[in-house]
Image (cartoon, rainbow, N blue to C red; front, side, top):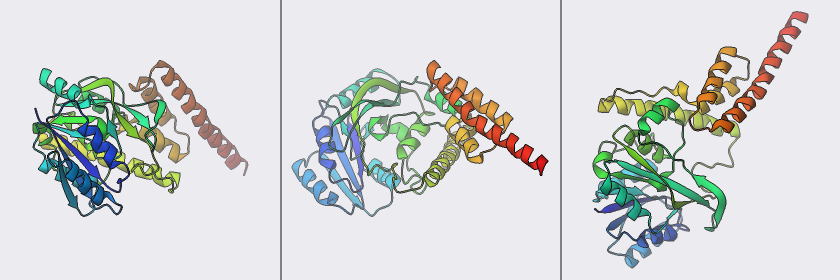
Length: 322
């Protein structure tokens, strides 16, 4: 069973050697590495060429003008020849047994995809203790997505691998809508195409540094929140269009997304009993919270919500007294 490893890169020359070396060091050897450079402006091209010369039988280097992560994934998938497609971010690294573990799962079960946990490391590769990315989920991931309105609670790109024949129903990805965060597209679409296995094992390291695509320290918080909301809305629409295209009976209702609904309520900054009650019920049933977290976030929500109520009462008294 051949595994194609797709690495999309944009300005990660510093981290690329470690990422590629972690694939070369895999105990499972029937692999190919496809590195797609998406118009980098740093020394990435030179680094990729050097690595491809060092491992000529392993690495296929592709260079294209900058079009975003979605386009890079499309290019990589088109060039891949493996039965299994595994994705690795150019700034992350895998544990040596990662591919052997997922291949064993694919060989011994009917799952269409495998996900696993990741540990966090800093820019220098040092472990950030106590931080694990991802959580254990049941094989019926489609049900999880429908119940939570596509709320995000999944491993990032470097923890994802799928059967090629399943991804053929997902690719090509809309590269305009998915310039970033393509792991969301992969996870949400494949969940409705078969069983997804989550391994309760740390098989990769997710690197935290100032250049991560989802981190924008120079933006206002409100602008960042607006982008998050727009991303959730786009994702929800994209999933439902995909479900319609494949003839799946399910649809995803964004009103079930606690993060989205609660954030919108806070933005309105006004008391609304009906909406507050609905959000409270979401918190108390939220499958991504344990019992203690449900209580904590329920209390936290009502403490913040109380401000809206008091402000509303104060405004009403002020209006009557004028």
